[in-house]
Structure formats: structure tokens, C-alpha cells
Image (cartoon, rainbow, N blue to C red; front, top):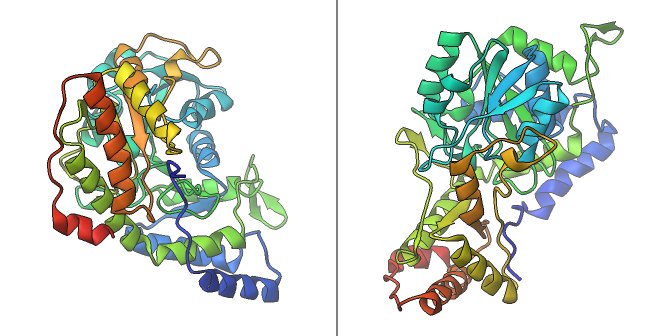
Length: 378
């Protein structure tokens, strides 16, 4: 079986050493030493001044919305994981969808202004598949209309924009460290901001509102994370550059092998260093995508229609006609991508896809894959 993803697992003895020390200390949660160490190491790795390790990426979004005091309408993308929109609704705000760019799959800045009303308080934009939004255009709009900006960077760990971490941008950025992500802490996430006062506010909010053991700064929740999850993060952070390099090689192998596939891929921002978080394929038609999906599943190869359905079609959110998003959501498929995949795995996956296309239309010939790239994947 080949799943769509597998978590990277460090050497068990490395994790066991952390676990042994946790056992000795008997300090499991409540801002333990490993949580603090992970926050420091992440700041160092990402070259950022401020971040907080929290329980998951959804809590990160909810903290961001609450900390900024957002009300009314929030402009957002219909092409994202459901948590992006549900967090807005959970905080008693209204998501207002703006259609996406047909090439990048990110929110289309050219359509944001027409959606702004007197009730608009913020923009929540997703860096889809780790590919940065048009950050400059969004920031200009936000400044013009005095709006806050939150970036859902759930997929974006390791991506840089203009030689800075993508988490450097916006009033608050968030990330997920879920086990499906390229860097994970089993469960987890983080919030980032350049504003130290905003950071202090979120630090209190993630711990029930405590500003001191017997004092409260205001309303809060339990958004803390534990020592075991921090231990996994510390183990994986040592290997993250290796993980990023492997995903880049796998992605280039896919692109080369699928050169004749009737499909396109997201256009990457020109000012980025990409993390290759996913391998999304936008098939020429939904019919071809479905046939490939079925053929792969018959061989126990599991892909994901990510993101489907479009959030703008969900009745419990804010249904709206988003033709570009709905078209892309109907044809998109993310192929397996994880650290332990081999060139043989990719040969099998791509051979099945190209065979389906051959039967679906005139025969095609796949271009040769560079031998050096294949050798690096073995």
C-alpha cells in the first residue's frame, strides 16, 4: 500500500532519550522545558523573533482571530482546509469568500477590494500547498482599508518569501505541526507575530488567560502543548533540511515523469524558496482525474482530492458562487509525497496515471527521467 502521506519518524532511540528525561522530571505539560526549547530552536531555525507553540493549527487560527479582536466580516479563500473557514465562524465572524487565482490557486487579490464592506475587519489568506499568496498586494489592500491580515500557513513550514520566512508576514501567521505535515510534532501548531504585545496577549490566551499563577489578563482557552509533542518536534527539527531536500527531489521526479500528462500544476510565486509540501495535479478534466484516482486505488495507492469540496459550497459556512475555485476543486488531486517514497514507488504511480491517459485518448510517450535524479531517490 502507498498512502498519500506518512509522517517522518526519527530514530526511536533519539525520541526515547527525551522520553526518559520526561519520566525523570515528571513535568508533562504547562510550559515545560522541552516546549521552551522547541520554541527557541524554531525561532533560531526560522530566523524569527516571536512564536508560540500551541496545541494545533486550528487553535492557532482561533487564537489569532480572538487576539486581534476581529468582528463582522472576514474576507477569505474558498480553497483551503475547512479549519480556515470554520475558525472564522467559531469566533462569531462571517467568512466572505473571494475567488482564487486560476494559476496559483491562492486568493485573488484583484477580487478582494470589491468584497470589502464597512463590516470587513480582516483578510485570512491561505498559502495553498505552501506556495505564498501575493503578500505585497494583500498588504497594500489591508493598509488602504485598515484591515488586519492573518496568514494560514498550515502548509508553509520551510517556505521563504523574499529571503524571509513566510511566517514573517501579516499581523499574525499560523502553522500546523500535524503528523501529516513535512515538519510535525504529532499534534501541534504555532502562531507568529512581529508585535511583542500581541505575542504576550496570545501567550496568556493559550493558558486560560493567566498572566501570573493567580492573575488573569483576560479570557483564555487551553491551547498549550505537551512535552511529548515537543520532544518529537526537537527530533524532527534536526532532520528538516534533509526532509525538504528529499521532497524537492521527489517533486522534480514527478514533474519530469509526468511531462506528457494532460494536466497543470500551481504556478509558484517568483520570490520564494519552496518547501514542496504537496504534489497537486490539476487534471485536464474531472473525468480523467476520476479514472486515474480509481486506477490508483485499485493498486492500493491512495491519493487525496485536496481541497474538495470548495468551502464556498458548504451550507454551514457561507455558500457563494466561486467558479474558478469550484472548477479547480473538481479536478485537483494530490499524489503521494513523503520522505520514504522511492523512485520505484513513483515509477509505479506515474506508470498507472500515464496508462490511464493512454487508454483515455491517443497514445503518448513519457519523457525520460534524468538518471542522476533517479539515483538520488533510490
